[in-house]
Length: 111
Image (cartoon, rainbow, N blue to C red; front, top):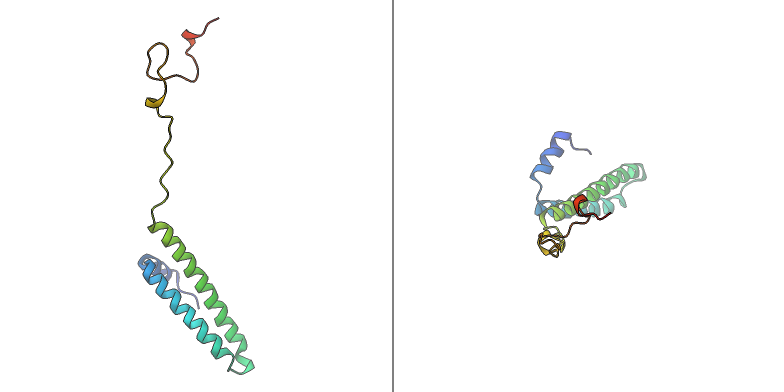
C-alpha cells in the first residue's frame, strides 16, 4: 500500500492544511471501518487485516506529521527578541566618540 515516489511528490506539492485534515479524517474512518470488519472475518484473513491496520497507522502518523509541519510553516514564527545593545544606545566615549569600544585602541593604552 505504498505510493510511487512520483505520486508522493505530487501529493506533497498539492497538499494544503485543509486537504491534509480531510485526508486524516478519511484515514481515521478507514481504520475504524477496517477494525470493525476485522472482527467479523475468518481467522485466515486476520494477517491481512493486521497489515491493513499497520498501513493505516503509518499513513495516519505521516499525515499528522505533515499537518504539524504545515501549521509551523503557515503560522508566523516568534519575532526575535530586541537587542538593546545597538551602537546608538551605548554611552559616548570620553574622547567624544559615538560608542565605547570593548578594547582600548593601542594609541590610548597607557604604559
